[in-house]
Length: 296
Length: 329
Ligand SMILES: Cc1cc2nc3c(=O)[nH]c(=O)nc-3n(C[C@H](O)[C@H](O)[C@H](O)COP(=O)(O)OP(=O)(O)OC[C@H]3O[C@@H](n4cnc5c(N)ncnc54)[C@H](O)[C@@H]3O)c2cc1C
Ligand code: SF4
Ligand code: SF4
Ligand code: FES
Image (spheres, rainbow over the protein chains, first blue to last red):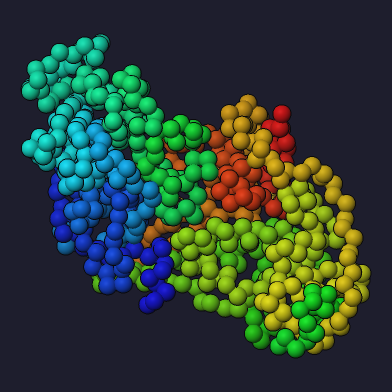
């Protein structure tokens, strides 16, 4: 059907080809790799940071960050189990059919970052959108200068993509992982004065909140862009600490998350002032975020 | 069919008709068009042209539901066979007969929302080919303030055909667009155009540039004074001719969309229970600013046409004009 092709609400059929359990517990996270199998679908091209609306037919739709880079030629997304659609997704097996529409929104301006140092900072499931930049940077490594990742979760078992991240050092990427509560082998930052933390140079694992780790490892602001994704509180404190280190608003990028239904600027609910997060975001530079009214 | 017209000069597309010839016209049109006309509280498909009302008070439910129904099916699926099928509405030639100028303007606003990038085929299938026969208002309706939002009781801007009641016996009928001219009718008498006198408005303030002062008023103690009374019933949004927010939900084998309202806290709440607009004051503010500031920032047009429904029908007597006015320094 020809007219169907132009129907922005009609998802393309896709098959789940791989499921990777990432974390366990009540809010478990799994990563899905999907392949579009719909003959009527347009080719799927996306930017790091863009999102997709995933359908579990009969249950509903949910928005997810695409958690890999277009350079990898496949579609991946990571899902935290929280409600109706995400629960059903977690029950699916490899080979199951879902629907995908998108990609949506404004992604990260990665090409503007060529020649710069890249500082990636994530908390919890916030690593999902950041992984799109991480994969891009790995695949186009020579286009960027120093690349640093600081990523934290509640415990070592809650770190998403843990195995993958542990091997990044070999891609010439500085990685610091952190957890909120003490575990053996995780170096505890100076809780009262994180900036005064003295740690052995080979330290890769910290106990401490992400904003503290930022102060402990003191990334250089010069010629650097910082990309911060995670829970709103973590983003707020991290940005404060980046400012202490000399970062300006225009060097910091983040993503916003408002409830979404249509993804295409029509259903209304994702607005912050006159901005629709689905269409105009989810990626924003921090000076843009500061100008928004506080509806998020 | 355009043979009734002597030329492109607008003045020559003006006719005079009485009630009987209008009824005949409507009977004629029913052959090719689905005719929607005002019934008791909403527009309905006209079954008996003899009963047409040509001086009705505006309907409670706005005619937006003809092009954007309260509930509609978007698609059907058969999960076991992995079949997903869009269920576009049947495309039918329609006339919205007797729509008031404010509601016609509101449909133009819906056009902005549903066309643009990501054109909405459900809306456009219903809307394309729809002819708007606008009936001007000889009096302001209760709480109507179209004049304050850039419209007027005689506004022809969004009309394909404009009907004006001149006296008890006669109506002036102007065919304004090509789409409208296709509805031309032999029995109408060509006539000189008369400029009917517009009624005097009760409300005389102009709110067209309210965005100027509202853009500084996101934080203001005034919001709470009005929001305190609100009971979050959603009437002001459901019955607003320009409100277009919707929800999408699945049942076992279909996906449907339904009108939704920014006045409900569920509208924005995340699964995590975080809510960007948890309090009434945030939601009332969002409605007012969307109408008078946000939409204008995006589309250079107000999203309120001054139909007065939200003022007339709010059970708590909340008046959007008062809110907007109170923000001006
Ligand atoms: C831009 C963006 C990117 C996101 N990326 C990810 C990601 O990479 N991984 C991940 O696990 N989650 C992500 N989310 C959150 C995810 O969309 C919600 O957790 C999910 O929709 C919850 O759906 P549910 O049916 O399981 O929960 P329910 O509580 O049953 O939710 C009902 C419906 O409400 C809506 N909804 C509820 N919470 C949210 C929310 N926080 N954001 C948007 N819509 C919501 C959805 O339409 C959902 O289907 C993202 C959200 C946005 C807006
Ligand atoms: S906001 Fe009120 S007055 Fe304005 S168009 Fe909507 S219902 Fe009518
Ligand atoms: S109609 Fe009145 S009471 Fe109901 S939601 Fe709107 S402002 Fe609140
Ligand atoms: S999700 Fe519908 S407008 Fe953004």
